[in-house]
Each structure stands twice: as structure tokens, then as C-alpha cells.
Image (tube, rainbow, N blue to C red; front, top):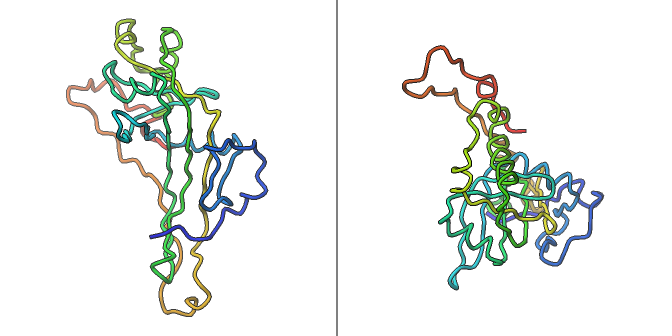
Length: 230
């Protein structure tokens, strides 16, 4: 499948800041979105990012959870985590988040596509050493993935904070790319007897599964029963 020529209807009119050379969308630039509200909304809906960097002369891309606080993206993991070690050592990183919204069925195989919203962040990470900032970052990760969970779960101890590496990446060089709408077939294909249109996709959570040994007196929280992404 290839990207077709159907641009986001608001792309040209969207207000935003001028992107840096690295953040500028070059392929199908009409899909580029640079306003902070769009970038933040995509980051806030997703919860898995991919962190890319060059390590030992070879490209590496690793998925991980994240959270956004203001203009900063926070990543976390074990102190021995190679990706976080690289990300906090001055090596440039590229962080991406992608949300898939639907399949686009065209009359020709060439113009099949996917509706999506994505964000690409370029920057250099910095390790968080202040315990209070680290505590806030880890709380934000939990709350970002499951809103409301931070009130119930035991917060990390000082020992647990010290045994967790947290890296922040600024959002100063970030851009979004968005594809919406139906297929963009060639005029000569419009009369083909082939179904064309969209198949919307969305994440649907299943019913919560209680852990073994769980006290019967503790009910399932409403934020899990009604779980949904923003």
C-alpha cells in the first residue's frame, strides 16, 4: 500500500509555529500539522512511543511507554536500559507516536491507504536526577495510561525512584502528520465494480480480569470498567 493524495482538510489553514528543518513534513507536506494543540492531542491519546537513535554505528528503534507534562516528554525504565542510557548521553533521538484510525479501500491496489495521526519529535534527552521531578514523571506515566489509577496505586518509594531511570525529551522540535477521508482513486478507475470506502478502527478494551487472590471486598474501579482513551 502507498500513501495517496488525500490531504487533511484543515492542513493548509491550521495555525502553528514554523517547523524546524528536521521537524518539517516533506512527503505530502499538506498533511503536516504544526499547531501545538494537535501535537499534544495525539501524544495524549497514545501511550506507546518508539524511540530511535544510532547506537554502536547501527540504527535502533525501541517501543516504550511515555507521558507528557507541558512541553516535555518523559520516558522511564531500568537504569541499565540501553535506550535510556543513549537518550540521556547527548545522542540525538527521534520519538514517534502513531494512532491508526482506519483502513482506506481504494478501487486500485496502488491507492489503498491508512487513516492515521502521528507525531515525530526530534531532540536530545536529559536524565532526571531530581527525585521530586522523577516522582512526578512516574506518576504522570501511570495517570497517562490509566487516568485515575494514581490515586489508588501505592506511589514509588525512594528506593524505587533511585532504581528507575527517567529521561525527559523537549517537544521544541515536533510535528504531526494526519490523513483522513476516503480513497483518492484515479478518474479512470472510478467506474470499476470494486467496493471502495473506509473501515474505521478504534481501540476497544475488554472486561477487566481480576488477579488471583484478589480480595472480594475490593470492587473493580470505575476507571477500568469504563476505560477509554481521551
